[in-house]
Image (tube, rainbow, N blue to C red; front, side, top):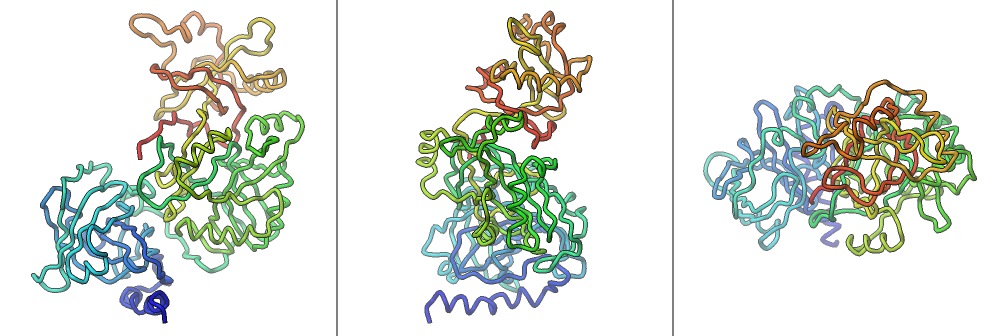
Length: 532
């Protein structure tokens, strides 16, 4: 018997203590299937049970080695906190967040306070834990640096000390301390979540599948240096959810609009999938002659021009034959997705992972004139509606969704309007981003003018217009020019390509690409790359 197969055989025994304490008909905690592969993940869960404490877990030999830390992780060099060693947990527990019912072991609210990867600074985690001392570094969303676990003979039970080694860790603000690293929710918000039926592996009672708001990616400047990331192409199209339940099929935009009549070929292919029920997440794209996604070709399709080749690139599976998969890691969801799409008909395609160094991948993407890359942590759960740091986007071209707030009068030979006045939301404030005066043909000028004519308003919707700088009115739009503008309710979302943002926060050389019916106006913010 090999060491790997021996380890797999031992797994049920090693989880025996964990399983004996829980009734999985009552709690949504994962039962655990056992994994033989060695991982390097960690999770710290804030746990409000009989008393508030933190659960510190390291992935070692296919399970989560776990300690209850009453005072939380120490942040100052030399500081030490009691850490009580408890039973091993299944690796699936790394993504568990929610409510453990009262009467169940550990009943209360659980938040994923921090998560990421760790690096052993000794011989190996298994050997060092057995010897009673493990020195390691954490690479998480909140914590980065060195710590040490040391077994102590003081007190009853299997007690350890969690000691801050190396330099001080950064202080954690109250807001950050009460914010989940995977969902962004507070403890109070998690505690108020409605009781959900645990349907894993069972058929749904209702044949109707509900719309799930898509998870969003955070724009970053550079690929992250740490973590287990999977990369795929960033597409320039419409985000769309495909829902199949028996003979019923739906195709919905990212904000819930019905796409069925506009993309009948995709509807037909979804109906032909060999599943009883499923919810797929993907992107509808129009393909140019080089096979690249083109938002402008999609816009031409909307205007009744020649129909380009279409594809529905699917990159995630949220439900499958009655099971909710959103709490499972991405790697597990993608494995099931690949099986479902193995014999899928065109235009359904799987958005495949692109392997290699992300910097080299970006260089190749730029060379081919493609949009960019999407990176996803392989251990990430699906967070509906959230712009999560577990999904990132690396853009090779500058594009941004913006909301139309008005337009200038036409000049010269142009009809209908001169330039669109666009903006974005910062909190509840609607801010001016710039005039967009290129990218239109005659048909587009006419259709856009007709759409804006239905939502005209008397007052300017932008909070920062007119704009006064250093005692002078901005030359972008002066008070005199504002009298000539036509204002509209900020409801229409458009896609704009540009060269850069100016120091004044305005678009340089913007060009209109098309309207985005899959985006809600209130969700449009100015995207700024975050550091990783």
